[in-house]
Amino acid sequence: MNLFRSEEHIKRWLDGRSPGATIGVGKLSELAHAWWSDRLPPEWQPHTREQNQAVLDRLGLTGPFWQLA
Amino acid sequence: MDERDLRLRALTYGLFVELGRAPTTGEVAGSGDLTEADVISGWQRLHEQHALVLDPLTDGILMANPFSAVPTAYRVQADGRWWYANCAWDAFGICAALHVDGRIETSCPDCGETLNVEAREQRPDDESLLFHCLVPAARWWDDIVFT
Image 1 (cartoon, rainbow over the protein chains, first blue to last red):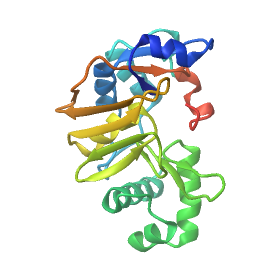
Image 2: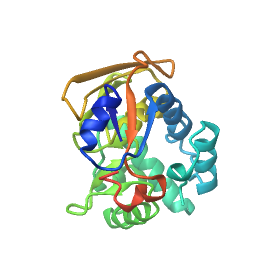
Image 3: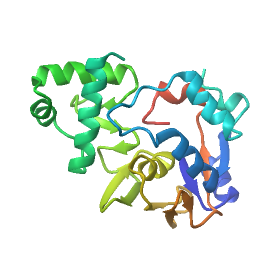
């Protein structure tokens, strides 16, 4: 789960491996806030798989790659 | 997750943020009126529930996601401290968890060029960068360190 300068850099880094998924860093920031913003309060409760999947879906991260199980 | 484990997790995360590093079993035990054996067994249960990640060699904390207990390629300046994140997602996650702006420093895994990102009000200042996730979501926890 890395940051890259461009698609060209990702392709070179993959070195023939199958690519995963690429999103812009703006979308990544949205995802991080949706995923992690509730982690520190003492009243935190674990997310269910359905809740986590809903976060991904809401951000348009759909399709087989983003299916949690 | 039962109330006992939720309390232990909250104690552990609270100390991580207070200290700026992973707490020891003794520090958590002392803050929660627990024995170190209670903490060790509780951390193991939290590890099994993916609520934190233990170092298999030491049984200490390796990851309290989004925070890393060990140095990584993702350094985050936030809330007056430098932190290590487990990956790019977690780097933004540290700002999100702390509810503060921050600065992320890393390098392109391909060319090694330094990449610095300022995260202000939940937005990166350089939107041209790309995030690549190699492992499909269903397999993230098969090997979370590799993921």
